[in-house]
Length: 440
Image (cartoon, rainbow, N blue to C red; front, side, top):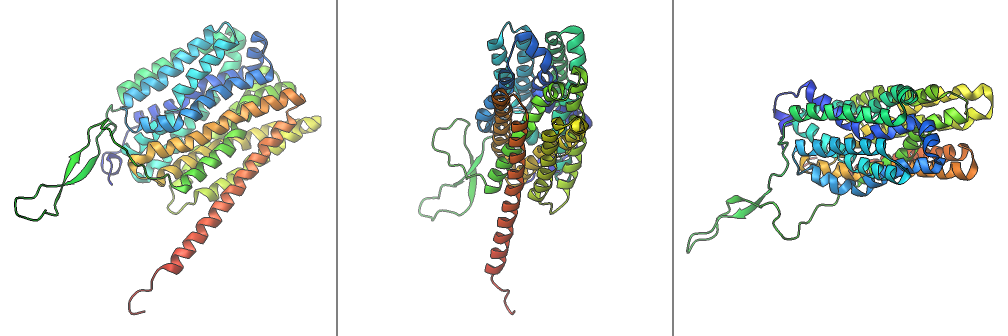
């Protein structure tokens, strides 16, 4: 099935900017609060687990709505989706800036989750429809790097802004920037991106009296909203495997994203600005690694699960360094290579799982398959801060939490190995079952 991305003119840089910004604005609130975590905790009198619950609420909302919103992304117009995503981010930020207590802050995080959950399905569908096939993985990597660009900006600017203006004012400034990005996106993105078009169902033409029914079929449009059961084909197993990998790595990645600055400040004695820079280092490497891994995925025959195995090992090495860093002053420097490995491996996993899920289904199911993987990703995102915060509250140390993160990364590596072995066995069985050519 051809798409505009297959046969049309190559899309421009403005569309790529909008896609990248769409990925960036959703998690910006979470990244900014993480970067300013010592200030937020002190101002509101929060415990570590209460602070971790903020991110958990956001990602829980995103996880439970991901599949449904993925289907909406296949139907709604691009500008409608932009208004929902950017508008949700702005409302969440303004509510956060004005929040008088913790309960209102939790409500703001609910809005943040609802606003950002459509980002992956919507941007993936735009790429599938408007970008040539040989460039899709590269575009996917660049737009996914928007998440880390958001983290980079948050780590570099929000600690200083929070100290100078207060953390609430810093968040309000970010809301104004998101509004400007919404205006740019509204003027750039084509509104009709294939959404809402009714499917054609073959229908036999009526036979003339006394004659047999002809074999020619004519398309019969099915109006949107027509009642009746619609049987959806099951999602391929490879998509579910990518979703599981996304959940395992997402837990560790978001635990580090949320708690790394607080860990560096409390356990290693870094000041607020230097502690915030740890996630900036991770984000900078995350941007580069997402683009790099996306180019690798662009190569014909690339096995996504082979890449996942390598990335899981790199992420596991990051967790090991975080466990060891507080044990002796001479090991404290390990937080910086840990941040590098976190950005280069754990933060780039979403590129591989999203690209793999897009390959596994036809165009009309890209939003749905992305929704399944997004649900896994956000389930991990939801669990990470919750688990880390609870363990920190119980033990008073980050060590057990980083150990759990390490186990999740190793489990992802094991999953990648098992899926590759199963795929090879299935390929071998199909080759054995293939009948021999005549005359041989």
